[in-house]
Image (cartoon, rainbow, N blue to C red):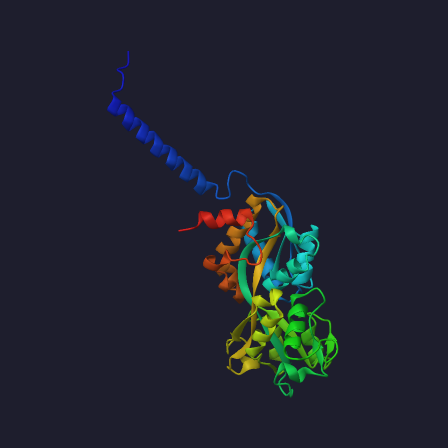
Length: 332
């Protein structure tokens, strides 16, 4: 007959059992980082115009997600930009997208359909406003665009939103003082080469390949945006508070800048989903966004600026529960 354990031995056995339970829990967490449920199914990612940063970022992110979430299939869908992206998300036509903070703020402010369902996953990188003109153009400031043919982005883009605001802040009335041309970054460079545009607005990461390629074919330069414009933008209120003064480094577009930095306006990009998206999927999506920064950043330079320390700040959107779960898991 077994000898009964002493009280001291029983205590030791309980302590050892507790330690083993903790270790088992840690092992399960390590092997199954997204919880007990493996994400699966199909999602649509609304990106941007074919030659823009959103589209290229989406392509590379899909590759990374294919490795990290092999049971999830992802379809990329071109769009006009931030405003159309948010509308698709809210209507259920897309599951994830990227949009600028000012476009998100305006969508919420206007209480557009589905606005209350939008949730943030991660703050990504900043977009920089780029006003491009031929090198010999007399345009030195935004005010000089009066009477000219100006590419202002497509109606559903974040470019259109910020172009109209920058023009107004400079005292130029959109649709009245300029001849607005609705076109995206996929067509504006060609229109300028064909002398059908005198200038165009673009808001994107640095460098944007379409602008870089144009500068290699046609002598162009960037028009500086006076830092005082930001004060005028902020005076409007609402979502304009997300704009900040910034500088385009002199080496962003070496041919267009001759090594000189250019003052401009910047705004953050946010990875967005809806409250209905599966938390396990959102956690995995967010994890891959952060983990793939260096890999994607080697090909899409703005992605290098994705930072775990700032990714959690998705204002004006609340964090999705899945993203919050991820940030808690990596909190030091």
